[in-house]
Amino acid sequence: MKKILVTGGLGYIGSHTVVELQKSDFQVIIVDNLSNSSIDVLEGITNISKTPPRFERLDLRLKADVSDFFKRNKDIEGIIHFAASKAVGESVENPLLYYENNLNTLIYLLQECNAYGINNFIFSSSCTVYGEPDSLPITEDAQIKIATSPYGNTKQISEEILKDTCSVSELMAIALRYFNPIGAHETAEIGELPAGVPQNLVPFITQTAAGVRKELSIFGTDYPTEDGSCIRDYIHVVDLARAHVVALQRLLSKNTPAVDNHNYEVFNLGTGRGSSVLEVVNSFEKTTGQKLNYKKVGRRVGDVISVYADTKKANEILGWKTEKTMEEALLSAWKWEQKVRGID
Ligand code: NAD
Ligand code: WQD
Image (cartoon, rainbow, N blue to C red; front, side):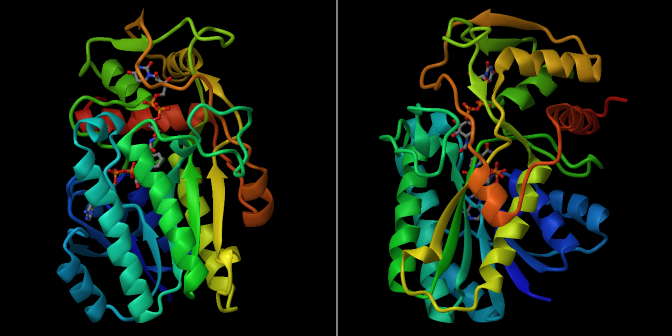
């Protein structure tokens, strides 16, 4: 069994990916500092897979602790690096926190990869690197726009760091640019656990339906789109998680040593379909039977109008495509919210 390190593996996307890795017979070791997750997620993962993953509490900003971890775990064959801070607004208020947490952690991990010959690395990037796209759907070779937030900038810089490192070492890396992940595991054992007031649409919807929030604000209905609200590519988190397994298998099956930038690849992970905010709200109401309290308000600063993925590269090269529908994603998100809130 190949041993894979999953950083941030108790987080939203990480936990779902751990389950998929275990399903595909990988041995998983999770490190997380619990800054945006709970230790209870371990139990959720174990309830699904019946196999407790190994876990170590580790803050990847602490270089000496990271070195010590690798000294004790020399048999790691691949790394999936989820650990990062991800709140766009917070990154504007506290850029240094974001540059430290998102860049230092990556650099320390890559230094250990060099030291121990770990050559398989998967990185969580984001569609935020595209900014407001010039054309849709967005392909991987679309122009990278100047980042509109320190968070977005950390993803752009991280991709550069990976590309440069791959070009001078044996490292093979894949950066996965996620579009908008939503939903939860169908068992409702794991899901998204936003800290404080959710910034993202779907957790705000489910918390409103659960009565935790009074009403949902629809940010902007005067955009140049069919119904006036913004368009995004919402992807079921389990589909997203599966893509990591496929990407990892691609890296592990390549046994040729790295010689050039071909050892660095980027893939969009989305459904290829754009949905408006109002469509998501309507779909939630229809699928769950829950009436949502919402109001239309002004635009949110920094929102792009319309973003959805061209998924051809991931479909053809990774042989991966999404299988789950928006309805399944919203239903699973609602089932998870009900469980968290103790609603029958
Ligand atoms: P998350 O916050 O749920 O998970 C991240 C995990 O990393 C958390 O468990 C947190 O405790 C841990 N962590 C953070 N800093 C750490 C550190 N210094 N040391 C150890 N652990 C640390 O976030 P997520 O939604 O699962 O996102 C995972 C990755 O995907 C992130 O890199 C994020 O930027 C990226 N991403 C997320 C989205 C999204 O909408 N959720 C979209 C695009 C990209
Ligand atoms: C989706 C749509 C909002 C909340 C963010 C990050 C991006 C990436 C994914 C990490 C928008 C609207 C939202 C609400 C609303 N993350 N909305 N009312 O903005 O596409 O992307 O998450 O890399 O970097 O910026 O996602 O879920 O916040 O918003 O009307 O209460 O829902 O205006 O049109 P976004 P989101």
